[in-house]
Amino acid sequence: MSKKDREGTSKRQEFREKRRRAEQRNRLIWIGLIIAGALLVAFFLIYPQIKPIAAIQPAAAETRPSVNRNSTGDPNAPVKLGEFSDFQCPYCKQFWQTTEPQIIAAYVKTGKVYYTDHSAGNFISDNANKANGGNDTESQDSATAALCAADQNKYWQMHDALFTNVLGEADGISFTARRLQAIAQSIGLDMNAYNSCFDSHKYLSQVNQDLKDAEAAGMQGTPFFVISYIPKGQTQPVTTTLDGAQPFSAFQQAFDKALSAAGAR
Image 1 (spheres, helix red, strand yellow):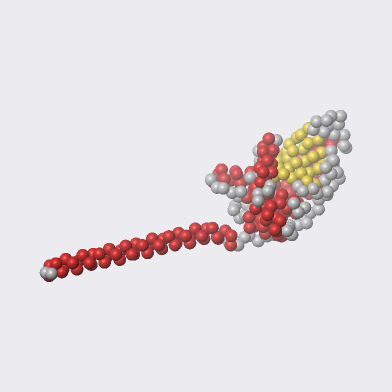
Image 2 (tube, rainbow, N blue to C red):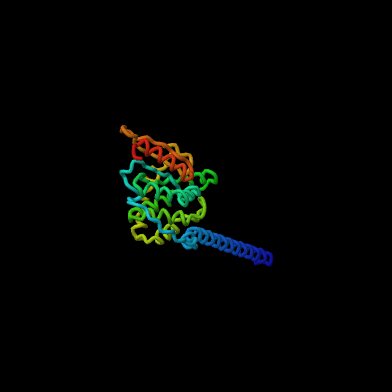
């Protein structure tokens, strides 16, 4: 083999060796990218399950008469009050803190009003989702959690604990599944029963129906109230509505008018 041939062969071998090393380097880069991508996906899947949740604050103990799941008072009371509420709603929390205790004391405990608390479906979360393109379900999830607590005769304890621990509207922090678990545990629920109820979406259809019922009654925002009674001498109920976190005086006026019409004053 001539010197020229040997030099040509050496250059071809050198070229092949460079190409082999480049291909090996590219393979290693791709493998590294695949591993990094897999780790990133794993992080986003696992981190929500392990990241710390906001501290749970204990709810003050409140007594309500003749509790039956999400209702309280005498079911034969002449006036019925239905509230459509969202645990993320600041005005609903305001009503719970200021006006609800007065209604319980003056009208529910005295047998004049039968009070039922309904969810408003995924109302607050849906509004936020429309605004930011998100997929938040904290409204319906917290409502479902409360109904799961009702299975253990602790609806109102969960109701109070949820309002005590809400941090914001559709914030992705207040009512994650893990934080709802922690809230449920804070009121002493059987967690196996609670988890089975919540994970199976047992009450999701009821929560969705709550929203339909509220909208059919004219709800534009939360909280929304439906007051019903049967006027004396009649057989069909009459309904009136109140919007928003009205002061106690607004409810007092509506209740007294309904009680008078029903011949119960």
